[in-house]
Image (cartoon, rainbow, N blue to C red):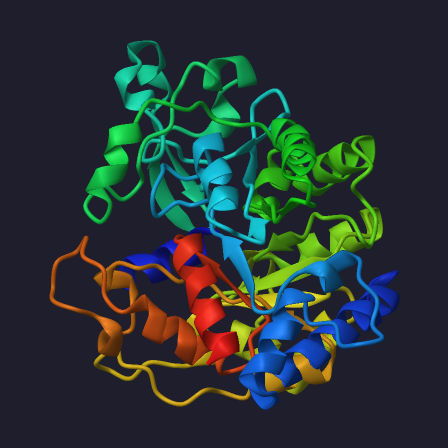
Length: 400
């Protein structure tokens, strides 16, 4: 997830769209309806078959369990995010999809997996005196940001760095693994995906995101063409390919829609926020406009899903407690869009207030209760830093 998601967690009609939308919509509408309306036994059976009822066909997103458990930056609740250690653990813990990774470019045009282009908080770059002079301040999507940026490093230079835990106050145990893993490239991830698919005897799915695409395009480092080139090289640019592409910028998804046939998802931050490509283009619309019925119909013209913040599914009151669900799930399903909201985390600060236990920043609350409440809305999946918790919560839900 991108800058929008970071801020939230810290606070707590394109070509080819219609066919893919119909394919995914049929599966998701059946699955979501089943989750809400079937008996526990039937829901469990449906989850095991990826939400496809008797007589349906597998393949593509239909092959995934519903609700789908998506390992957010891997298993980032337990390992430094966007490392092969985190990705590998996410699979071991049962994630259906691994968000590998958030894609940002190097100076020499390679795509690497980092939460943000600024890497001071996710790598040990500050410990490298040879890169001290690279520390600088830039305006990233309107926000003055100081640190070290991937676009100022070659891939070879980035490979000398090692990943560290991004939020050590919440995850002190993860600091045990600081310095163990290097920064992966997107091409390495695609090869890893194939290796893991062979070793595990089941298809491994990934869910990469284009990060700040307007910012990078202005630097001459367009992301979408680079992503499409690598997917084509590895034979993963088809409508049933196990690679879902996502972005907070709708125009990035529209651009990808013309380059590849992969499932595409528009990420949606807070209702009052504006996608940065809209800001740059002078488009006055906010996310609130995109989640109207008309806005969702427009998205369905070039994408197959949306990734809303969980607050767009169930808002919180002033005290941080969950209120009543919005109509977003129903409205999105009505136009054939899947919903993969973000992000479930086990620690107290990231949970709705009514699911917290105590006040310790690194203590777990009641994520099972929160998962159950979100699953009951009919969402098709969820991003989580703790895939094992998500898998258990899903089993409880479909068998409940």
